[in-house]
Each structure stands twice: as structure tokens, then as C-alpha cells.
Length: 306
Image 1 (cartoon, rainbow, N blue to C red):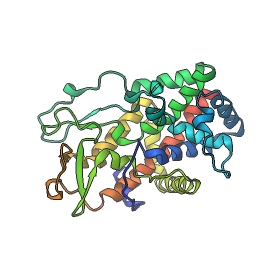
Image 2 (tube, rainbow, N blue to C red):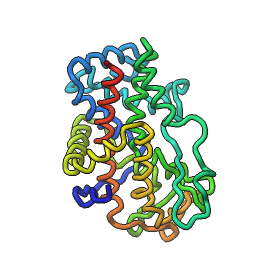
Image 3 (cartoon, rainbow, N blue to C red):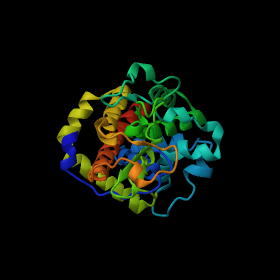
Image 4 (spheres, rainbow, N blue to C red):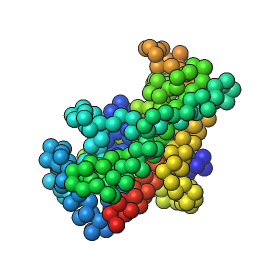
């Protein structure tokens, strides 16, 4: 994947994110899949989602006039597992969104075998949700379909599949949530929110369509290499490992630059600086990742709907 960074560099804006990939990223993944579905598949998805307990309250709420109801509901379904965190906590499953696979930088005395993930995580949740979305009925089927759409996006966010462990982070940096880098002279970024927000903010139709176009362009310019990666990674576990490798190589700079701990307010000179190309490279990687997520989500939905 390193070769990709020279093929299609994108300058990305820096902002403060809210959720994984931010809502924009999840909707881009959803639209990339939606436009590949057949008319029959789209109708089948719409029929399932209409049984959702939050169909009126959320899935079709706020629909713009120029977006068909079924398409808008599909977009909203991709963000529902984040929305319920603040609106219907009984539906929320925080540990389902990620897996903290240990990234140990070179030279650290920490050992990966001492930090293996425990408990519920995305590697267990996503296959279960696919099975439930295939076999359940009514509200349950609609709820699990939302989880599938969302988690396929989450598993392609590199920092949802990795956590840095070393002497500074003996308990891990929680997927970059506790880690700081510096861009330029003064800009301090927290890694996880920075990566979440690489695809921008706002779910207007124009922004979604622009994001879809960028992701498709990044994918097509690197189609040969991406196709090889997709052929090599055909299981959910392999998708997570692929994201883990991306996190190590690009989010953590191969462990050559150790981030500062986000344990207090820090001055810029206390935070390690990353290369000027960091944001551009991250922007490209994010777009390729969501493009792959869209293709893989299309395949997963085909399995559910058949």
C-alpha cells in the first residue's frame, strides 16, 4: 500500500470529529454500496429497514427533498449505531465498534502476547450481526442490518483495529485516543479523532457525493494493487488485520515516531512532529479504505439478501 501514496495525494482539512469515520465517512461507505445494489436488492433493504423501531424518529428524519426516502434511510442506517449512544443507550454496544490489536513499536520491551484483546469486539460482533441480519425477522432484522452496514465501515478505519503499547502506553493508547502528534509548528492532533474525520464533516448530499467521487477516484487510480489486497483478504479477520497493518504503517509511522501521551494539555514543543506528508497520506489511505469498505459491504449485503 505504500506505493499508493505517490499515486493520488489529497490535501485534507483538519477538524474535530464525533464518531468513527465521522457520520460523513459512514454515509460514503453506505452510498458506495447502495449504488452497486440492484433495484431488487434496494427494495429488499428498504422493506427490512421499515420495520426498524426508529424508522420515523431517525432513519427517515430530516430527509432532503432531493434524496429518495429509501436511499436516505440506508444512509441513516449506517450511522444509527453511533446515534443510539446518546439517544437510546439500551441499543448501544460500545465494544462492538473496534478491536485493540496490539501494535508494539520497534525497540519496546512490551510483548504483543501480553496485550491480546479480551471480551466482545468487532471480530466477534460483525459475523454475529451478519448472521442475525440474515436469519432474524421484523425489528431484530432491521437493527442487525444497521449494525452490519456500520461495522463494515468501522473495521476499515485503521485505528479501530489497533492500539499502541509501549513503555509510555503500558495499557495501550486506546486506538490513538490517548496519543498526540504535531502537524507543523503548532497544530496538535489526537490520532483517533484525526483519522475519524479525514473524510470531512457534514452529511449534505453535495458532501456525500463529493466524498464518493474522491473515494472512487482513489480506488481506480490504484485498482491493480487494491484488487490484489482484496483477493488476499476475504474474511472479516483478514479485513481487521489489513486495517491493523495500515495503522502501524501510516497512523503510527511504523513506530519510528512515538506519540505523546494525551494526559494533560501540552505545549507544541512537547509533542513529536510527524512529516509534512502525514495528513496527505492519511487522506489517501482513508479514501482507499472506505472504497474497499463499500465494495465489501456490497458483497456482504448480497449474502444477507439472497
